[in-house]
Length: 421
Ligand SMILES: Cc1cc2nc3c(=O)[nH]c(=O)nc-3n(C[C@H](O)[C@H](O)[C@H](O)COP(=O)(O)OP(=O)(O)OC[C@H]3O[C@@H](n4cnc5c(N)ncnc54)[C@H](O)[C@@H]3O)c2cc1C
Image (cartoon, rainbow, N blue to C red; front, side, top):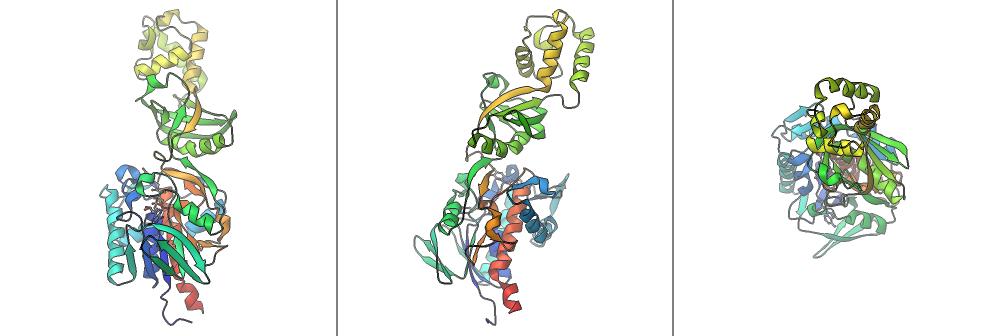
């Protein structure tokens, strides 16, 4: 038995989960090497939440997390919760801003989150508990007996434990290029093929160009092979390539998987979610009293931007030259149907460059409980987006990174185990 716990822990990747893991392991008494291929840690964090870093959310219901093993996600989130995350950052000096449950640093700057993490790493480095190895790309990981050999270009680090925290393939400019999948695979783990998620969707309709630039509140229904898969509400952004905006991002992970499986995906936009089809039809009939003399898109003035009105009328088969008085009952019905179900055939998700996260990764069933330790390779720990967990927009992906990173750090440091011996 060691008298003091000086386990050598090598963290691969200095993103959200790696920073949390390194700080935690060092605080627990381990000797940590934090490897990061970029010149500095935390690059992806800087671009989160449109530069404001939505680092967690008060609503921690499991519906916001998608994984093949939701019960394991729950165990991890309970072991290091949103409240623990808030306390962690408050202790580092962050004043938390709560915007209807969405949590941000009060400064409104993601750099505040990165700075407090970097300062804490530097403090621990000053105490010789962390060695910062930046500009250091890990090339391979092997296990020889009980020792891990972590190979970089100039050096091979030896460790008692390794924490893999290399992220996914999303936003590769920030440094996450999928190396973690390769390392996990080389150590015997399965990898559910990663696909882009929280991203825009390519639509086939030619009129998407007319709609580009418009933002409208809508209910988004995703149909896969004709059946409703999921629904989301919020501001949809029409883009030259198709559809974007948060409700579209939220459904994109299902689109990625469905298209990969060869299924057909359709997105329907309900542009009047507050009204039933009947109510909407009645409203349009009532409107005739004061719009009867108007023509084309002027009939829908005040309801939608002109370009959207034009697309709705065209799709409803109503000539733009017709005045409202000339419409038949069937015209009104077809128009209200379009307003309730403006449909787009989706043929792709935007790529990794535009995706915020990936679906897929190492299945949680290959970990030991919520210790984040590999069930296949003792001493190997996995954290963050590399695992088969993707959260909805709203701070859930970072909460997963904090929770899994913390637990990996605690268990890799092995303090509890040492004390129990
Ligand atoms: C534009 C954008 C906005 C986002 N906004 C939010 C938000 O507001 N809220 C939210 O919850 N989530 C958000 N996310 C998602 C969130 O940022 C990620 O889920 C989270 O950062 C994942 O953390 P991670 O530690 O697993 O990986 P990362 O943060 O990606 O970190 C992985 C690190 O590993 C390093 N690395 C990779 N390979 C190697 C190697 N071979 N050797 C050494 N180092 C390596 C990388 O350089 C990187 O620094 C956003 C993502 C993007 C792209």
